[in-house]
Image 1 (tube, one colour):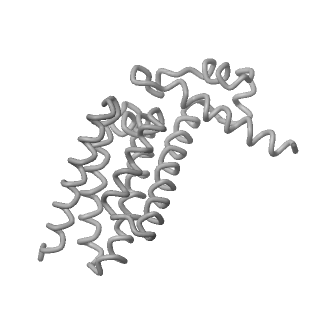
Image 2: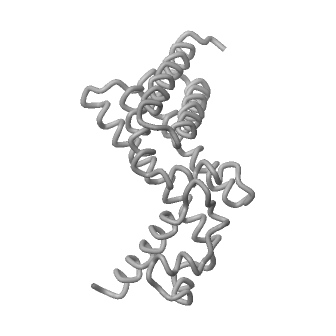
Image 3: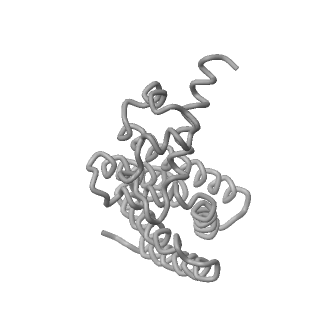
Length: 198
């Protein structure tokens, strides 16, 4: 393995270690550089070869979480292209993501309203990316103007994130019920958008 590959691997180990330290009781601001280094199996001084400080790591975690979720939703859209319903497939994919990546989604949720302005801004930027991607998708599928597509996309993204927050600590039957409910809510939004004249 080259020096550059080793450096990238260590950086990814630090990111993964930081995610494992987050849970329902611990936010990003409660995790120390020393803890992250120990969990990643490196000396605290080595941390600085990869990140300026713990805040830079935090912003990277937000970026990684948003990117992971966006990639998953793109996969959902590919699944839709092969015959799945848009809303059902998207919500099912989102709930699968939360189940498999609880700490990743918890980070986005918690820092969205957290005490750090930098983290809040980063999460809002990730949510905006979602809204923009969904806006483009709606324009392409429904032939509506940008403003209407953007309003519809924002309503849908906020509904799904809110349902995700509720589903995070739910057991399997309740999570299924939350998924069914948000699918109905998204259909209301879609129907409303189709008859809305401004």
